Length: 313
Image (tube, rainbow, N blue to C red; front, side):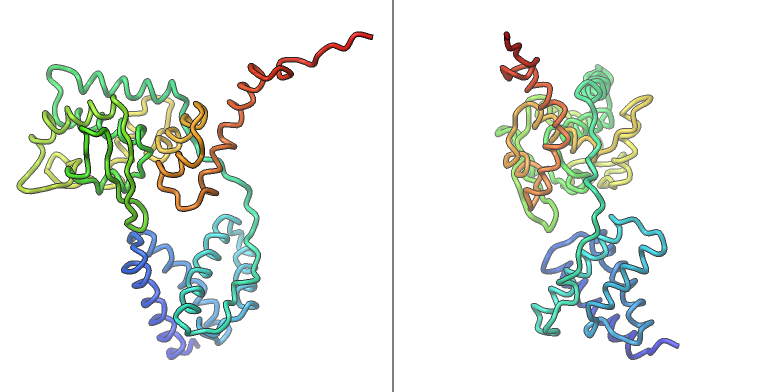
């Protein structure tokens, strides 16, 4: 039988950590929930060994990971759970509740590099052209103007779906062709916008949004009832707009933005700033995505790229 004292102690320290993530680190509810699920799973493992989270040792963490492998959990998921534990124990160490981090010598499982999926430039162009035609029609309603503006913004600025949903009207500075975006951890960044995105947003603000807004709502993109859009709704809209045979998503448009910029010569630091990546290592995946394009450029322009030079005997 599980010791209720152990259980209550673990619950309390987990609640304090989640509060720290939410209030001080500014993580979104979905991220906090993911942390909590992983910690609860480890807490159950520790309690089964008659222990508590604050006294866990390296052997507890190793056994937990081995148990996950034994149940067929993928390496990527195990690595994510280990990352959650590392964050938790770093917090306990910083708060002087423990004097040793049990995760410090645990090796992260190798899961291979998962390359982000992106659309071809032609596929994005076709999607934007279809919604653009509908938005520019004489009888275009607010919903057509809104949907086209969302797609243009997703691709132009590489925004996350949550960032799209939380944008306010005052976050747009279209006279300067930019938007102020609040990303993960409530970190703000300035995102430049191209002419197509600016024009789509201007039309939505002047001709579409006034017919959707109710009262003093400041959220930029609104539903037919005047409410802020949900992430799930935006996902479904993008999927529907992508047309037959293409399963597009907001995340794919974000990756497409970055991939196409790298393919056209953008440096990684600029792409990192645009996407709001805290670590350049996250952005470096786009060097792999664009490797095929880089090889083609090398073959076309390097003096020895097209074929081997013939050496006369």
